[in-house]
Length: 284
Image 1 (cartoon, rainbow, N blue to C red):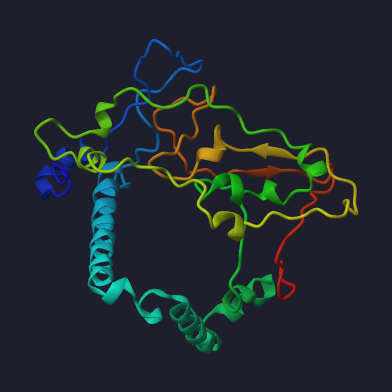
Image 2 (image 1 turned 180 degrees about the horizontal axis):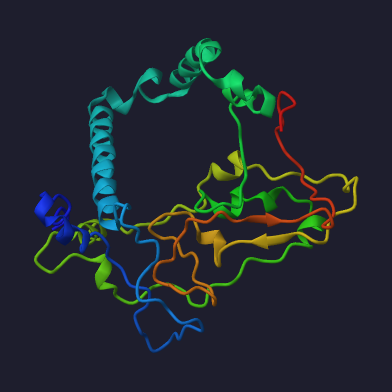
């Protein structure tokens, strides 16, 4: 079933096109009544778009590749003497450093120098870190720009909109295959209890929090507006994301994560005060 209607002869392409999308915007339930009229189905169903079923199929093929590699890695570990592996079998830092060294050697032959006038040619020479309000993003509550704001600045920022209901959703037939087809989700859920990893041990080391040991040297702005999705702390693009389910959303079951969200301000908004940790090479 997963490949049905995915590949069609020319005389059947119209039939394929009628089955390239699956999804509805809302299924009535007694405990939640949306305040905004819900559309019949998620928007953006352009004719040139491959459709969510193609994305699902390709995603599963990619996932299978990673699972196969993971299986082989576990087999190597299991067969190792006393489960001990040499460093070169599981440390990837030398591999990254070798790739970066080779890249630096060919920069002069590439196109990076063409961006010097825009001040971004250093992207070709140094690894960069970033924070953003775009979604989806990994570990949303740690990777947003607001985590770099001085507390006095953060007090001036409006909160993200609230979601109007909490998980789980009601059963959605659009997300499940017919009864006679292989149900991948049911197979996965038959295994160990899945625990989402929204706060792994290393995340606080990677997304370091500034110390704010000194007060801001300029007045903090009071006209900065946060434009983001409802529940943005859960907009991580994972199967457990619970994003874009606010009072104004017209397709709650879509919970679309893709958002060019950000902080809006102009010349009258005042200073946006940030403290950037781990600045190296003087590059911001």
